[in-house]
Image 1 (cartoon, rainbow, N blue to C red):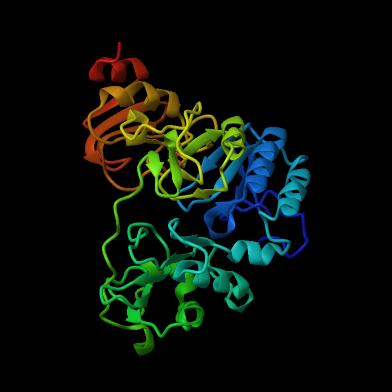
Image 2 (tube, rainbow, N blue to C red):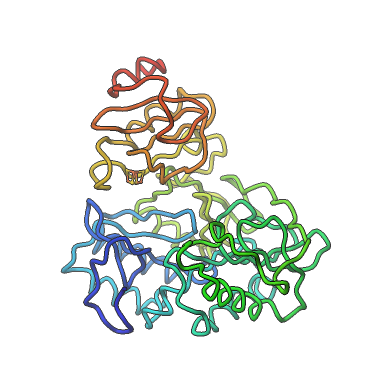
Length: 383
Ligand code: SF4
């Protein structure tokens, strides 16, 4: 169990889905996760976050697959000062319990006053009505006319159905039930209560919870297929920037937030940052090239940042990516955190060496095993 409101004694809880109040110890220090409301930072908040990462972390920010931002490498002694800065910027809730519950992935295409905006804000305001859910449980609010988050994980979902109505869908079920306008958040809360009352805690996630849904949550409404994802470059909101491996230096993040005309930064689950209000500009470490080879590559932090890793990952992936056709995944171990699905070329660390497989997931039976970096460079023709 994590700390209660205002309790700063639980800063090193392990195995908990981390946030700013409950950071997780990694190989390089504490990992502190920030969950911007509606996936948006004002320029002032972005500057505050970038400066905090420089002052208290490793000097980089990681964009997660749930559109959150992480500071790594924080010392236990420094964490309270970092938390104070994040609280002052409004990026973290003053109530640790509310912060833990605020796992809301919102369509990055929202506009003020639209359905995604309205529902996400209401859910944020009603977090106290939720039961104590498993740590990794989360919400998806994808209520725009063209859904974007159909492929993103989330246990309790509001989506646009093919009939144009909003629907409630439990993750793992292919269809949902249409909702009356204005009743979306109440239906979400009711579904979380049913989940807990029907034994969902032991399953941990809705997709693994096999209990039949109650009639009021069972429907035949199919969600609309997702729209194509944004690519780096010019974007309807301004500019889309690709983050190789989901990481950006705090300096580059700061510079982006301070570009004249940038009205805010939006996070996405696709390693893309959207800058509102200004066209694309070249920044070190932020790609505006939709064909950049590193945007076809996934690599987890690997060694030494993750204690489960026995091999380095990202430097290797950066060398290999231009020479690999298709999607490359370099994983520090068989867990495959950076890309749970299959990739065209998969390199998995095991006992200090690399396994190589093709059209597979991390940890799949390898085609070649016991390789070092030089073997891989030779295999893919890296000079
Ligand atoms: S895949 Fe393994 S090494 Fe990489 S981050 Fe996950 S647990 Fe750590």
